[in-house]
Amino acid sequence: MAFGCGERRKPPVEPVTLKILVAGGFGVGKTTLVGTVSDIRPLRTEEVLTEAGRPVDDTRGVEGKDTTTVAMDFGRIALREDLVLYLFGTPGQDRFWFLWDELATGALGAVVLADTRRLEDCFAAVDYFERRSIPFVVGVNCFEGTTRYPAETVRQALDLDVDVPVVLCDARERESAKEVVIAAVRHAGAHTADRRRSVTT
Image 1 (cartoon, rainbow, N blue to C red):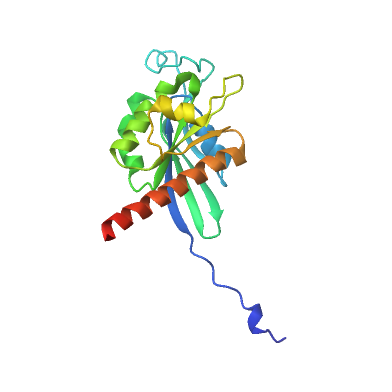
Image 2: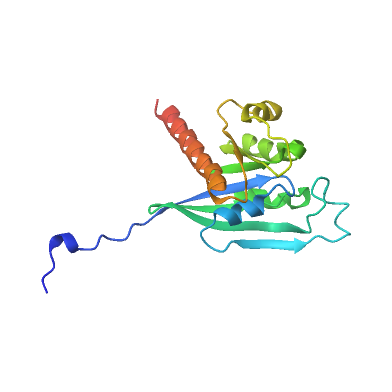
């Protein structure tokens, strides 16, 4: 059987891989978001919250939460054939912050997940990425039964720069969660391009 030139298989595409962090306060939905968008079964390092740990971990507003991430969450999503994201969810409690510097190494950008009932819980994550010049977006996880505030109101409450995207989302819904991740990639890409232009001019 003769095969025409048009039937030759294209060589496999070697995808570009990018690292995105998902950060925020305790119980804000980081593990949920990573698991929702991941194409693979996510790696989770969750442990059961003990009564001894409750005085250490601030569970106000998330009293029903019975597990906590102690190292990281890991997921993978292919946005295109040639673009793959590795998602790393950070622990939310202060006592695990020593892991953040390790997880942040090589990150293109980040998502700071926020809960408007406990907006102050994401201040530390915002400050962390601002101090290290890691571009980030804020994803406002809209929990059921909570008041939905406009993105601009959240921006003002967090005192964010005007160029930092604020995206309302539901971390349980795949398309909604993907919008936040895509916004982070676009923002980080624009930030990187701006830095390159400033170096060459």
